[in-house]
Image (cartoon, rainbow, N blue to C red; front, side, top):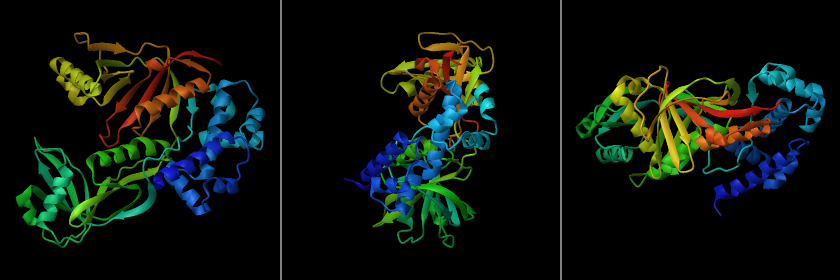
Length: 423
């Protein structure tokens, strides 16, 4: 059994124990005995999995449960406090005031919902949170007309030119120039003359100063599929459940060289503490307009996206170039993709292309600065709506992705139509 699987199992058992006893006093010694681990290891593993300390995780889960009851039931605050593990009415009142800045009565009558979901306990790979330093580096841009495997070609070419290089090698995706794709190398040995690399598709750029940041780091074998899966896990799974968000610092991949070849990569995802947890709000019909296309079967998302882009380009190409809000709805075996528009623009419809507008009277809207997994957010929003006493139509859930801050910093709004709100 692998270390990750063993760690998954004991953390899964620990999280299940916390969830089953969330309204009771949770004994730290009992948590240690569940995993047969020391206190430092428990807190380190738990923090790296969830992005929260054990105490902070328990505090947020209790508060989330209490606030759901405040919204969806007629229970007295004193009864809710004891039901959710608070020592008194006043303790819960203070927790709500400190976290949300409003009194419990204001929260009950307001349109904003606080929700902190339980962690799934699944960890696909090890993640470590630490303050790391990216050293001063020489930046090199590598260009190639082929995108596939460009990072390995760049590193391989560099090592062929400098076979005895002993410095550290970092990399990240660069901006495409014309029909040439780009991968950037950052080399810690800044004293070396790298000018001869210009004969092999590289362009010499400025020296980058060293900087320190909090990173979520993870190591992975140098395999393109595993690397993509690792980045997807960091962005969509781990970051989504943690108390962190993506910061404005650049991400990096560090190449670990063995026998003259890149053997492993260490991924550096820059993070900062999230200013607020996932926000859920009840709103009236926002009357959003979209032009969408639907496709079924294999590669449906890509086909639907290309179909809507082609259709809009024929009528109003400027919309494709300027639009920053993208629509996505997942069906059982289909995808509907689209572009949000702010005008009364209508294009000719066919069996795939549709002009649509939101039509329900009320929506629950989940907002997050983290581009998490669609299904995970949809499950979260649907479960929250049911727990809050609302009747919802899961098939009507859709997402709007905002790319205004760039493809590496996409935010999401998930909309869930609410049929009946029970007070």
